[in-house]
Image (cartoon, rainbow, N blue to C red):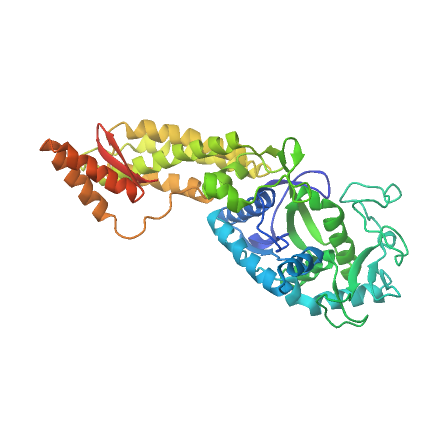
Length: 462
């Protein structure tokens, strides 16, 4: 497999010792519903984890929750509640949307507030090694200039970096580039006891602590949105390598932005759409399809038209799956097995793997799947044995299921649907068209759509 490594700024072959992958991806700050721009990161690294496992690797995947920061405190004050209550609420909402998007829970989902001892321990190591200092007001800062190579991940020369919007500036820091490891307590804020007094951690240090605790000092892959490259990931590298003296990560993988009117979707710009709101209009599967329809490093544009196109593409998949299921129910027991034609579908699996192995190119992977669907539809027009159909369904589920686009499992027994379809058929034979129409509408009201075809009546869930 090849990935574009943000550390070296080139595509590189990735081999994993003992087929074991230690992967970390930055999760949400849980003060609100997450938006579609956030979701790209969550879906991409969910799919990357699935694909690594599909290719025979054992993956330990950690995605954190930032449950203490300025935004959390502000939201708690606005709602007249506690920071923990806000975190609990939006972590639960995260899992609701994540489930809708087909995201498998990470191996570990640690919270910053549950790892305070590990955070404080790393800060103590950094102070002892001379990479950090306690300010007079109780803050603790990392000395960026003392870490050789600071700015490398972001592609900056440290002498060219200037204080500004991306770098916090205050009167107690020794250098504008220094960043907070620990923030002294302010009235009304949650706090934890530390060697420097009451306070709470800075944003960057929590990830270093959780990576080290759950995955070790050096990990294989670290993921996140492109906007996290600097300063967040830059600071993770600096503080982790300064503390432990070993490389932090073999490869950083960053996904591109989602744009609205050629501007990055973000809460700060006010041009964001929550996944919850978008799903109410287009459905979660369409959002997932949209998010993986382009190669992960490419920017993609969010629009109603593109979401409708995603829905239409999914419908092509669903129609194919329904057609396979229907053919299996009505298979001709006397049909001869067409081994050569079925084996030919393997070429699309090979194309899919080739695309995905080349820097995780989901766009070309999906193209290979649709080529396979066209071939399957042609095969379904002929007379196939049950063995043929089972083989077709197997490869279909293998690839489409990996991408997360199989139809939901049918809830409960579907025999009642088949019984009503049979009753409708008999009603039509008896020219009782009023009853036939009643049955169609009755099923439609329950989310079951009928389609009359030359080979019989098929049904699908709306």
